[in-house]
Image (cartoon, rainbow, N blue to C red; front, side, top):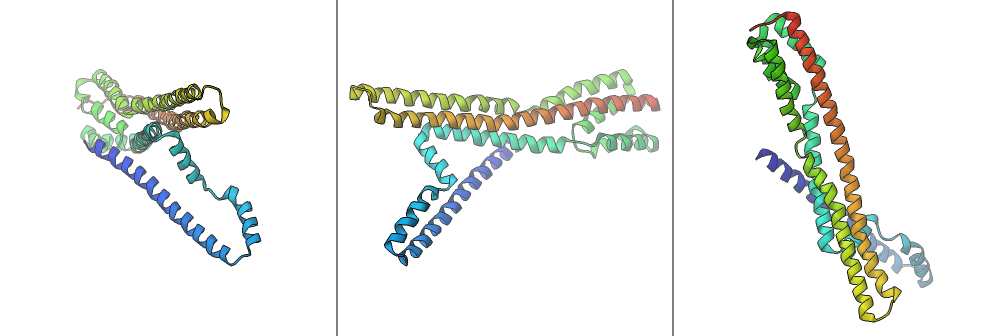
Length: 270
């Protein structure tokens, strides 16, 4: 339940931040327009016409162009594509935070465990694992908790609990992969519907009029472009997460081997 609330909170922050930024930019654009009108009142008519011709091509900011394309693409499909981006980014950010918190300095942890074993025995080493955050410390704790059953059981426990921790690290990656697949599909569907509308227009007109069908076809292609952009963004996050997980898993495996060597070295039995 806490993770669901965290995911909703991240989604809300993203949505609120985007809307706030757009509103702030709208206010700035309106103020700039008002200042331009006030300055234009004091200029001759010829200078006003020349300045409008020079400024007109660069008047529209990027965010307004994106907003215009979003409206042209249709609120239905573009809205669904935007939702895939928001939810995909929310899951990716949640995973990035989780994986960063799961990263542990294993060399430092092993040194602390060795010191604890020498000074206070297994219980002191288990206390060190309890006070350390991350999957590596959890795996170490499970192994140390079964030291009285023999090193073979300790090794099996480490391997089994390592698989559990791998599942926790890879959680929600399937949903991000799903959004990567859905986004371009929604874009293609919007394009197909736009093409159907364009051919319906041709059928109603009775002949091929380039001006009549160019608009609907151009609008239809906006959804495809938007879906591909969303898929590319989420794919970058997905590949980063997979690389991060692979690094943590390799770190866990190396640390587990080092722990077994440490236990053999001290020939410990609880």
